[in-house]
Image (tube, rainbow, N blue to C red; front, side):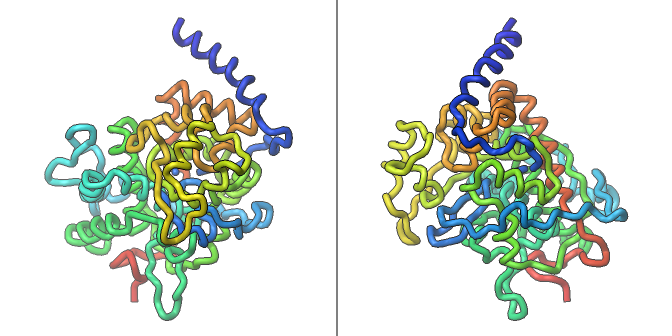
Length: 394
């Protein structure tokens, strides 16, 4: 009876919510996908829908983006890739419950131990690690290009691009994990795989083990990192639905992915500059009470010296759960790209399903994270296993 009632409510609500959408509704031929710990100065160019910035968009229109080529026929990721060469880097099942979080037991599973240590001090780093995974994979593929420091030959890598600097977090966690891995299995584990494992482990820890999935491995690290490509491929928080669809279509992601992965907006924080354009007197469909609360926390015109942060989920800010979808249905979300998910009947239906059926969303989130982690994998011809994550070899 309870399940039947929930389904009735779901589809009854669908008509009510979809009817609130603007008259100029974007196309519903949904083809595209996207998690947020955030901060960008107001003068910066856009960040992504996991993150934010309030600056005018300089992103390439979705129609102008080059589609991501499929992985090379010789590039195959698999669970257990490090089973023989470095099993402690990859395994996830050696965990015990410690309070609300899974805690590694000894001998530690190296990457998860580094992630757990960081999150025990600051849960917001978990949101940063999930966002780091997204930013890495959407630019040059999942190849750890986001980690490369500037050099004389390349003074503007991805990490210094406005969508990433100074907002992106978690670099020190990847460094710690790589250092620990190199002590046990030198030259075996790529930085790209460590990022993927860290996002997997952050998802598990922040969901109290409810999102606990196996991440295929076998990625190589790239040698190219360009600031301009971050601006081209990372979708900003002010995208409408059509733009959001296009940006994910360019990465061969499908209909469900943007709605599912946007659920990671239930963790992390955002700078006021990323959403003040939606606050009064500007028009938006934001809940007036929520807007008033944000106005108390944010200056009218944020700037680089006065740009506070607010949590993205006012109810469970440190838990990876379905609260984001409840907030979205109540119009208690920050970004234009969040609100855009209710401007199509098709995506509204998915929002309602995720709000009502937590286990379904958790499973879909795990699947989407693995799918995103397979974007544009490097081969031996254009990849390597870096000795240090911040610099290419040689």
